[in-house]
Length: 484
Ligand SMILES: Cc1cc2nc3c(=O)[nH]c(=O)nc-3n(C[C@H](O)[C@H](O)[C@H](O)COP(=O)(O)OP(=O)(O)OC[C@H]3O[C@@H](n4cnc5c(N)ncnc54)[C@H](O)[C@@H]3O)c2cc1C
Picture 1 (cartoon, rainbow, N blue to C red):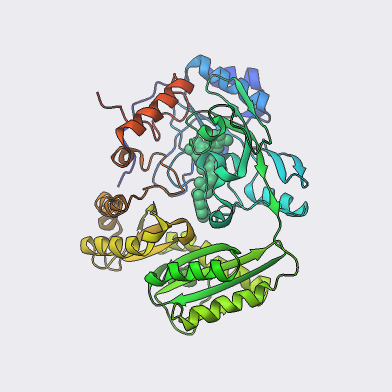
Picture 2 (picture 1 turned 30 degrees about the horizontal axis):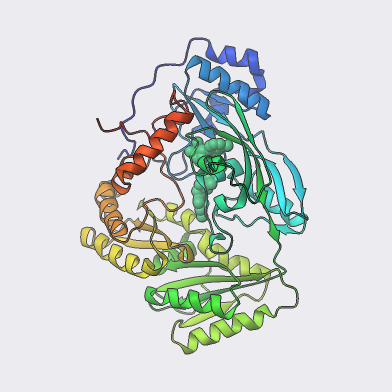
């Protein structure tokens, strides 16, 4: 099955282009050998087959700007790539395109623990940024399953979400300033650590979440926070998804809004993590739903444990939960969080899956799960509903796993039909079809149906204004031919 949308064929790269790039940028910066290209030609979900023949790895903004200028002058389209962990094919490059990797631009340039800011190059691995913040006594709260390999430039381009959004917001809320190389090679220096800046349009916000379609993020000023000095983690078992919102509300109220993570999992994802990804079920029997709750506070002297116990006891008395395990050590807390984090890995091993990244207004979360499950089971009665996600953000990864006894190809041939059914439920609830993963190639052709024509028009006008030659990430989320 191919999920690749129709793409306008690209002209071949100009003759001798790699040599021209080498002459200007130096040989170390230009990769053309098959074995060195190979790691860039992998696509996380295996939906697409990238076949770029040149990858550039500049080591500074100046080098990157030079590389972009050379491509722009030759009319060669470019695809920026970070850690290549994106889930919608946004960093997939074709043979007529040049990939520009940020991985060598990986310096942490400054940390200011007094003003709670950090300035970094876009090629820093997210986990390295988290660690550096921690060493300075601060917290950089962006956290997601791919944090050991995704790069902050990719996080910014994708406006990544993750598990800390409930408390700290999306990546958009964590960026104060940006430096960007524009599609013609000019550098925009917006690297300002300003909290308030109402001088005109917020240009930085155009680039955040633009999936590399407007320019290449090269540096960023990030927002830091005081580091939590106490953290408590629990896994709760629920008999119905309908109770999950009342549990979240209770936890926020009784903890003085100290909930830093609130994740939900249906039984199926929980089961496959235990079966395929070394998870261990801490309960003595299966339950239909699980909620992973983490409280954290930077305030010394708070008895967070007592607050957490009050949450659990009250939830129990109100019939919101049927069992709970509170971590007694950091290792136990880690084991509980891994039950949620390892879901994508386990799903890969549990057969084929049809995936959705939905957000709905938080209040509609249970209704969405119930109605979308019914819609899917009406199409494929034995399908496994592999729903998990960030309840507090109204974001559910509503994935469907291959049922036993159904051929992989037969299951995957139902992809569009299942997508349509699930997305229709989301649309009825004013939801979004991409909560945090972006559009890329995977959802390109569906986007128009979920956007008012005026939104599409404004987006195209922005793209045209900043990238008139359509050089950045051509054919991705704005790639469909505009209606005549
Ligand atoms: C196990 C796993 C768990 C995940 N969990 C989450 C999650 O909880 N929340 C979430 O939001 N995502 C999640 N993701 C998706 C992915 O990790 C994020 O989207 C991440 O932000 C992508 O970063 P990256 O560096 O890998 O970007 P890439 O995949 O390399 O690129 C992503 C997009 O950004 C563009 N791009 C990359 N770098 C730049 C740059 N410097 N300037 C301009 N454009 C650029 C690319 O062209 C592409 O369109 C997960 C992925 C995996 C594999």
